[in-house]
Image (tube, rainbow over all chains, first blue to last red; front, top):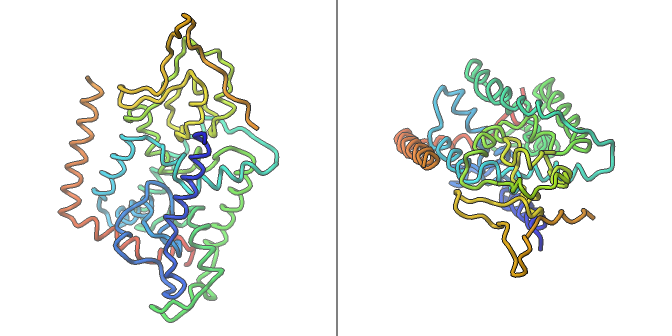
Length: 297
Length: 45
């Protein structure tokens, strides 16, 4: 089994594990147990009927609207970032999995300018921090396409009578412009996902923006043997975020999917001590030069 | 060496944050927030 197949299995397992609360069918409520005190290291709405854990971006906003700091969550995000950088984006995030699958649909393919990745910091600063701090409303959650897909659509389509209020979730009057805007954003994004690789991760995700800051300094990092690199650009073709791996293997937009490890010139470095591949000299005196990556079937 | 100083710095910040978070009962606040229906997420007004 190659690394990419393993990553796909891990992505599906994460989707399954983070959504294995089935009690919502009878309780008509989200899960309220002790696991909700833990956040997943990826974007996954805690108002999703089957969600077992909390969403870190939703929790950050909750604290910001209360005008306080989520110290424990910040410590958790720092520990994930400093350990593996944005690896959770490539290996765990269900919204990332959706983007990987949507891109397989045959359509016009477009590349995204790298400068657009800075827009994630604009979203993080204004929509997640500043505007919620001023207005005391969770504005990123109001517009989040992951929330629309995982929480808004299931609850509104199902529309059960909630025992707490003895009323259905959606009634005449409470589904208005906001819901239409949310659906519009989701539909536009789903279309964009078929045309560009990981378009949400690269341009809009505030959590990816946080983890991306750690890519250059994390314990787990990537390195390129530039002396042996033939600039064949196979790594660029295979990269799910169109990175030029030989120029900047630890860019902030990298999702650490490790596809570039298929090239012998790219190696995994753990805390500067361990590299999984090092150019060696064989017994015949021939250098263990880089082999180009296998053609994608 | 400077890289290890950076890691040590982050480790120190993490410990401070964990202690402060524990004093402020962050875990309970996270559970309360995560266990409530987020009307913004559903898009209700």
